[in-house]
Image (cartoon, rainbow, N blue to C red; front, side, top):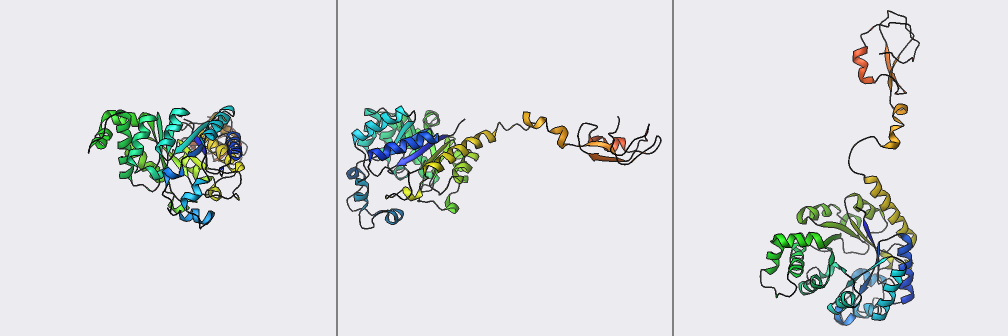
Amino acid sequence: MSTFIIAEAGVNHNGSLELAKQLIDAAADAGADAVKFQTFRAEQLVVLHAPKAEYQTRTTDAKESQFEMIRKLELTDADHEELIAYAEARRIQVLSTPFDAASLHLLTNRFGLTTIKVASGDITNAPFLLEIARVAQRVILSTGMSTLAEVEAALGVLAFGFLEPNAIPQRYSFEEAYSSDAGQSVLRDRMVLLHCTTEYPAPFPEVNLRAMDTMSAAFGLSIGYSDHTQGIHVSVAAVARGATFIEKHFTLDRCLPGPDHKASLEPSELRAMVLAIREVEQALGDGIKRPTMTESKNRSVARKSLVIERDLVAGEKLTLACKRPGTGLSPFEYWRMAERVATRSYAADEPLDE
C-alpha cells in the first residue's frame, strides 16, 4: 500500500491567497497526495488574551497574543473556495484541519470535504470530536501530547458518533461504543491515527517512533506519523517502520515571518522527502526471501566452486580450494570429495569433475 503523503501548508500562507496557491503548486510539484490547510475563526478558537506557545513566541512578535497572531492567518470562505478549485486543477487533494464547529461545517457541508484531519489539541475536545464523527466520512486524528488512555477515550467518542448520528450520549456511551464489535469495525473502516510530538521543531530524542507500534497493537487501526522534526529522515524512517500516512509541514521559504515556517521543509526538501518515501516503499518489498531477477545473473560470478588447489596427476589425493566463479561443484560438496583421488591429471585452479 502506498504511503499517503500530506503536505501540511497549515498557516504558512501568512493570510495571503497568492502565497497559498504557490504552496499548492509546490505540494503538487513535489508529488504529495494532498495539501492541507487550517480552517478557523480566531474568536471561536482562542480567548482574547491566551498566551502563545514558546516556539510561537520565538518565531513571531513576542508582545502579541495568540489571538492577534492567528487572526492574521485566517482564510476567508471565498479563499477556501478558490483554493479548493485551484488544487483540483492541479490534481492534488485538499484537506484542512477545522478548529471550531462552524469551520467544520464549512468544509463538509459547503465544500464537500469527506476527510477531516483533527489536530492533537482537540483530542480531549469530546463535543467537537462527536460533531466531526457525525459529518465526516473519514477522520485522521493526530495524537501529540496524549497518553494511550486519552487516545482510546477519543476513539470512543468517535465510534459513538459514527454509530449514533443523532443520539445524546450518556455516561458510559463512549466506552460501550468503543467496546462493541460495531464500534471496532467502524473505527477500522474510517479512522487513521497519527503519532506526533507536539513541539516545533520536535527534538529527536522525543520522537519515539516505536509508539506507532504500540498504537497499532493497542487499536488495530491504520497508523501514520505527523512529523515536526527538522529534515526528512524521520519521516522516511517512519515509513520503514510501517507508517501508512505521513504529514509534514512545508513552506516556500523558512525565512518568512510566521509561527511555523522555521520548522517546515522548503519545496526542494519536500520533493526529496516524497522521492525518498517512494523509494523506501519499493525497497520494503513483499517479505519473501528469495533471489531477485537482477541478483540471479550475479550468482555464478559472486559464488564459489570447488577447484584443484595445485597441479595433480592421476592417483593423487585431491587437494581442493573454493574459488570463483560458481559454475562448478558447490563448496557444500567439499567433504564428500576431499577423500577422493584424482582420476586424471589436473592443473591448479581447474574446476573439479563430479
